Image 1 (cartoon, rainbow, N blue to C red):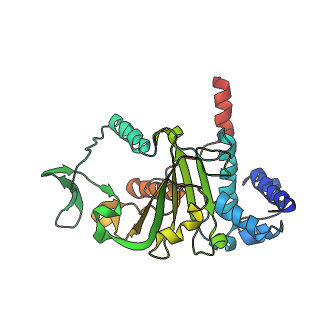
Image 2 (tube, rainbow, N blue to C red; image 1 turned 45 degrees about the vertical axis):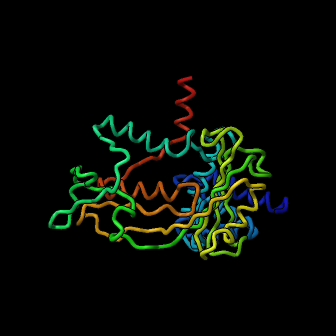
Length: 317
């Protein structure tokens, strides 16, 4: 990417940062609810590689349909990226929990207990029970049935209520070093846009290390994943694996992706979708928020005024 192109990309990024939906002066005469992303980008004359970077690495779009959709969504996504980048120290918009993602359900378990929830761990062969009208009323394991009004589960528990929508190819790589050319970072996310790879979908690379207490001292763990287009993950994932440098051991995996097809209001079953190939978890968070709305009939508002939050922290200090 040339210097001139970088400058133009930066100008576009600054425009997004300055954009305020309720402030007409920041719109530069554009109605982003009507102007498409393609039309907005053409205003700045960006090169195709820069457009790929903006759409897939900053806005986290998984395909190019966004180019012909209202630009407001892409601008909001980029603004979120910019605000997150400024929010956390370390030059990244992403955070990752120590001891790995297993800490998230543990935190939920503790919060659940505060409100009277009960966790039953390591229960084998769980079976969802239905009454004569087809409504779920409990889950049985080892001869015991836990009664409930609603069942929330992933597709593996109710395979007759989901449909296959795709397949993910994934590699887990063990290394003794950080990914080259990443400034020796212990936590890295790389997005390879599909156009660069001449594929139908993007490829994702994520790396964490012993610094996150997820590996022995001196070890790094990298994940490379994409939407599978063949039955040969070792070939499909090669572009991502080639970025890692020397690898001690690689484990390949492929799994089907499912989406629910049931009517939750009729059977009391609320199913999640399977994990896709992305490593930034945006789709998973959206799935959880949608599930919350289905279960409660309410919208969960997680929006935060970052300026107000920062001011509050300063006052507390």
